[in-house]
Length: 423
Ligand code: NAD
Image 1 (cartoon, protein in one colour):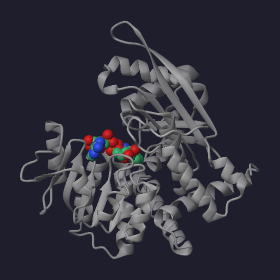
Image 2 (tube, helix red, strand yellow):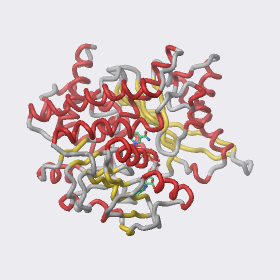
Image 3 (cartoon, protein in one colour):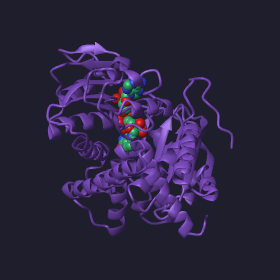
Image 4 (cartoon, protein in one colour):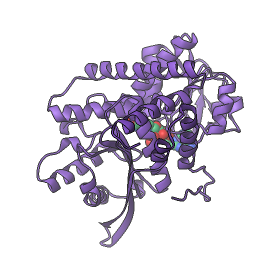
């Protein structure tokens, strides 16, 4: 399997990063060569062509993928992205991270990911529905409630999940709500799913703050990315923990106000103006400047590879909460560790989403639904248990929190593969 960097964007191939992380942790854990060989590559991947009748009457064929990385711990699980720059290597990397994430959170699930190369912003609702159903037509024999359970990701919504669930149910001849998560509430969605990733992040921020002696009341926080995860994290940190949100940003730029922002008013402004930029009584800043602000907590909540060897040394935060997937390059990680910054790595910090997705499956199987308070109580137990397991490993092996998170996850996975007789 060849791994190539994206020469067009110069962005580092995320699957190459996965390979590097795997190799390093296999060494630290003294994993057997058999186990290492089994976790280096996906167990199975599907490449499909999806013909869609467009509104102009012509057929357009879209490229799609589903990567099932490893199912030693249970059926595989992971979102589907609709993105114009989707690549098989990004899907492979995200499928591997899902595998480690489910293992770290002690969920009875393996990891997978899917993607379709398309631009949903340029498609009508009808075209989007035909594409969603077309994707299921190509992959339905490989997914299922006890086999592989997709979910939403970038540019896929509860409506897309509803169409996909419906298409799968039609093909198997019965309602199968449990085939996909992130569905609308009326069709078996879980209460609290839309804020679950941010809420899970808040629980581990509380644990980490207690560990490093940071008083969260009035602690300053900056948030890069003001979408589903970034906005809810800012609002919850402000309202539940008393944090002062001094800067936020989106793809168009950032805003800064030393005395603090009201996250909900900023969000309302973004809804009407298309960006946080221009929010009254704030100073404009760039996404680059945002990372260098004097603040207690930094929350990257947008994209991969934003904390790099170039800007890591200038970061002043005491705590970095990685709500985005893969925001820190391995080189930057070394620099942040040397500076003694406490990092909540992505596979821990943003695992609230998959955990509540798992709760959604459990509720679908039982046909009995919990209220939001019950969902969050169970989520908090899972997130704090994972944080403590990572912290204990970091202290025991004298490694940083990211390496410790990988070690906990890969150790469990290796144990499962040994028990199953695979290695
Ligand atoms: P989203 O599309 O709702 O929001 C993304 C935000 O990032 C938007 O505000 C966008 O303007 C901003 N953005 C895009 N490019 C940017 C740039 N160059 N600089 C600054 N900001 C930029 O997406 P989301 O669901 O909030 O996901 C954000 C991250 O969290 C992704 O890495 C995703 O994989 C990860 N994540 C999301 C979930 C979930 O439940 N939604 C779960 C786990 C991880």
